[in-house]
Length: 171
Image 1: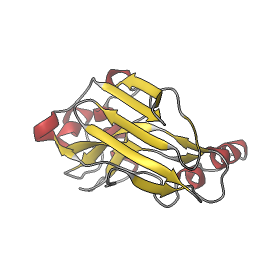
Image 2: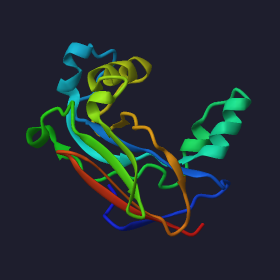
Image 3: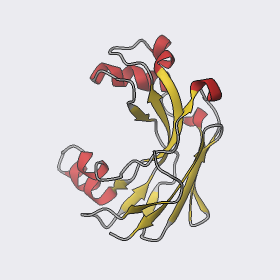
Image 4: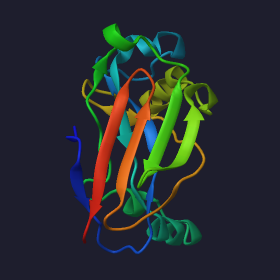
């Protein structure tokens, strides 16, 4: 979890850090090859997360046919707000998803616009690996991803789940 107003250092090896706001699914009961019809039974709760991406490294990996993980995986690359149990949220399938940088809205959409329903995302992930209690799945982002600079104040939220706020620090 990330406390509000946490400073995330600008990561090394990049000059093009991007933001992606997402609803996060917290797995409460693990499994493999989970049937989509029962996938939501495996959810403990939901949170708001930021998928920070070193876009230049990701783009270079794409061009070379390499995995993107170098662009996505770095210290503090996926800040996540508090997890809200399903008992409090239900299983949200609609609601505003938004992100602002320095007070300006950059991303705005609705959960009903996700390409994949949450149950399908869980089922697909469970085909590739065994899910375990405590696993977090980031579900996708609305249009409007963009670059961040040191000093940027980033705030975002998902209706009915919560909000997250960070500052991008110096490298």
